[in-house]
Length: 218
Image 1 (cartoon, helix red, strand yellow):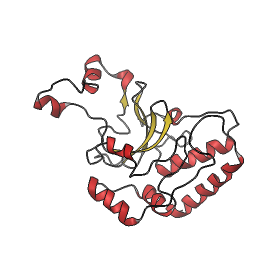
Image 2 (image 1 turned 180 degrees about the vertical axis):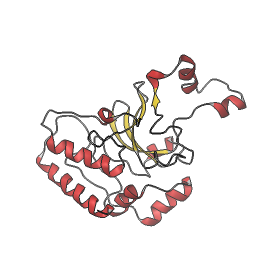
Image 3 (image 1 turned 60 degrees about the vertical axis):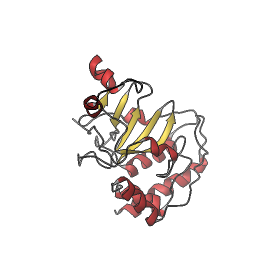
Image 4 (image 1 turned 90 degrees about the horizontal axis):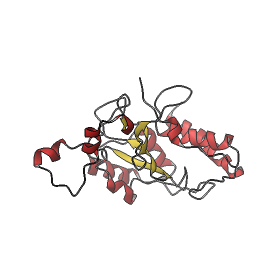
């Protein structure tokens, strides 16, 4: 099955969401989608940040929609203001086998990660400081500082194109999403189809979080 065929299957599932009612908050539901971006707009974004977007994601935003009101609070566009918070042109520092688990950090590692922005650092210390806001784009916000992100700039081929759970606001960390059945990482279309399948199977009051899929590859 090629990418466009799979997208068509997923969008048919999403079209069926009009029969569902959700109790938990988020963007407009059933989903409303914005018009796709042009190939030229996407190429310009890639050139500015010196990256190549994953093909499944690129196909979706140029053939189906640039953004939308779901999942949760909505799919961000690559031109959304929130993307400016990330150094997309720099490499993502973690891999699917080595995510950022804040609970596992030593006090020294924690202090290094969350160094006060107002603290004066030497040039060498600045170079050594860990930057976790690099190499990804935001996909959506679940609320309470919990996000899904797509890795677009990394030296690790197994990490490129995977979707991660990002929760620094609640001191959780940054973890790849793991398919609960296949036990493999998830790409953009896996992420979107999981949302569609989960909502189609859910009851009115049932809430889910992508954080339930956060893990790592052994």
